[in-house]
Image 1: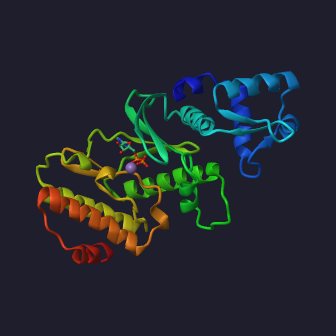
Image 2: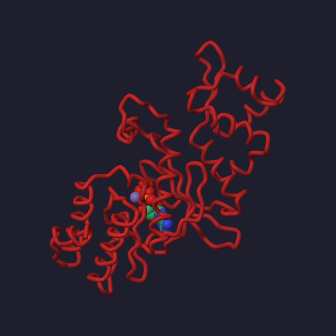
Image 3: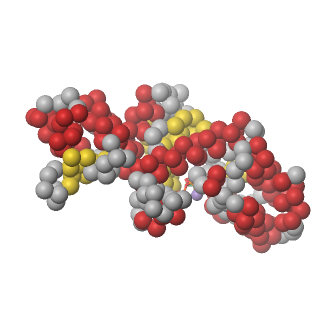
Length: 284
Ligand code: ADP
Ligand code: MN
């Protein structure tokens, strides 16, 4: 069942149960049913009914092999909380189709309350492998839950977009933050990796470089995953998207980001630039 349909099937009691499981997901990977029973308002019959409903929608997971019943929220469960939060703050009226699926996120089109098309990006760290979980965990022993990491990544991307936008950079305008989701402006363009025909490739490259400079000097961030896939072009204007890992990056990362772009423009648009000059411009 699509995410939007599942969200609409979740009523206020199930929603509060979901939020309870989210609040407890840091300290308890699995939340014992006894704890849920003790700390929520539901009587046993109600609890049984709402848990069964959330299970059927795959918004929670039921562990039966511990000798006692325990539950935890799933990624879809957190997605649903985000959807409801964005709805309640009148940012997202409805969710539409999926437009992008990466290792660590799912991106949907949606509509705001004025029926403008917007984008909602759900962060889902560690959904596919524990490798990515380890990679984003600074302290290899301080195991943050995938829930916590996904929330932190969404917050980091929202913060980065907000700073970039305020400083006039070409990024999608951030519209709102859910739990693990951010709502932003839809860029109606094509990825640079599609090698679109550009009226003035020199100017497009200059715009990309000035966006990197704003990130570096005003927002103190480095993209860290800059490639033609994370640049969307519309009417010769390049927008840089996908900013989650920005604050953890190093100077080497800046060099690598730049060289991806410079070599792409050299290969596809025959523009020759020297990285050291661009680096000193960015740092200057
Ligand atoms: P990731 O690569 O981590 O999955 P991205 O932020 O790059 O996440 O988004 C994945 C894809 O979704 C993009 O390649 C792009 O096609 C689409 N997308 C993301 N944000 C937008 C946006 N603001 N406007 C239009 N399309 C977007
Ligand atoms: Mn991307």
